Image 1: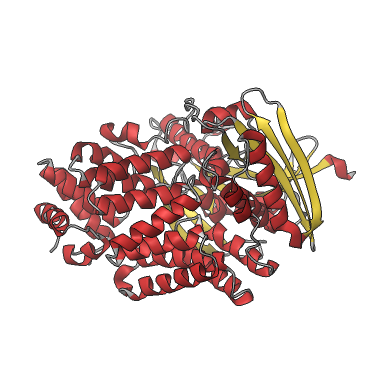
Image 2 (image 1 turned 180 degrees about the vertical axis):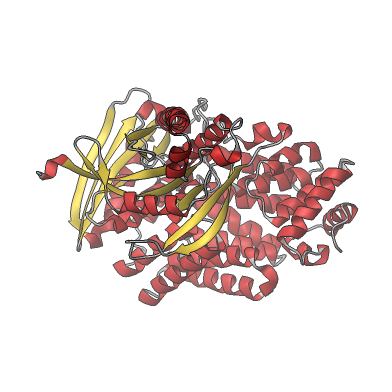
Length: 591
């Protein structure tokens, strides 16, 4: 077989089969074949409607590939729902139940469309772990869809499976989360994320799509992602541009979309796409800027050289784009781009790995990110970005486990301050210090650092959200809510927890009717969201719903007390804090 007949690519793989198929056939083969044909029609319909492709339906099995993990999970959920509905009138012991396994990984695709490889094998092993009528997914799929599909996930831990060397981290997919009538609109992605067209900003706007990893090693994907993220960050420094956030750009990874569709989904005039090939100490990056409306190529270039030149490459791409679509470069911003963050490439790679973990927003991923940033600092003790990112992750770890007291915040402040000594212009350091000083009740300092971070990177949606949180605690909740909504526009596919901050702003403004559906839109809400909902429903006189959320709070956090919770609520005005405490008491949460 000649090499051109083979293509290696990333895909979401679905493997399914019928539980107890031989028993069903021996009992009533005609009825079983009829039920299997009906189920196959469901599979084919849902796979195709979710941008997937059926590879094989031999016997009682199904093999399919999808362009996105979201499509694969959404299709699997709907398939199980419809197959179950078909069997409602059939006795329990005669029902046809499928097990479905999903994995996101590399496949080898032949010219005739058939696929092979470890990605398929792992999906098959996950299917074997699934319960009849259930869906089991890999950690890779879970990380890609978390916060983007309305389903619960149960962590099944590391699983040793046949003929796969390393354990597979599996998750069981729970029932879809059904929003209440009042939350339906709030649960939808920001306008444009679901297909509606976003209004174009009044300045040149751009989305940077994930650069393709052209290296032979799929593990180098983090490096291509890091290059993309650095270019987004560099462009975001220009106030003359509207730059879509990383999360929203990366949602389109692996999807076959044209420039017009990207422009409509993300509300931009220009799209940047490209590829990265890294081999040993050499790097090649191609980039092309496309007009979203017409599909015309505006600019394209290729850079090839030593890996040590990677920062010069990023600077060249960023400055060319700005000068092409936004006019004259501001001297101060241009000079800032030319700074070399580190000359130790191992430190840079450690930071890129850490950033990949940081974007997952889980306690375990934060620990992995922290290790990476510490490795970067060990390799280059003068790398300001590593200190800033370490400070950020320490704040988030404190928030998840604030029982550690002020020590976690002190460590975050120390890391952020070290980073600022090395580079006063590092936005990560300013963001981390802004958050840290807020929870330390140093409100003026928090306001300074977050304002400075916003000056350095006016397009950064995370900075906007943290500023919105700060404004809420300063007694300006309406301004805070406006900032969070602006961040959601910059990032139409924003993280799930942005809804939480918006809900808190509305709650602080006393607008409980608006806050409730926003809180209800949080997928897999943590205990503090339930505590806020209990307070909102109590304020509205709905004792039944308030009691439900009190129970949910205590189920997730049995040791919850109001006194233990309020150290995460740093209102500047003691009267605002007292009002909040009284609302929690009205909800009858443990004091």
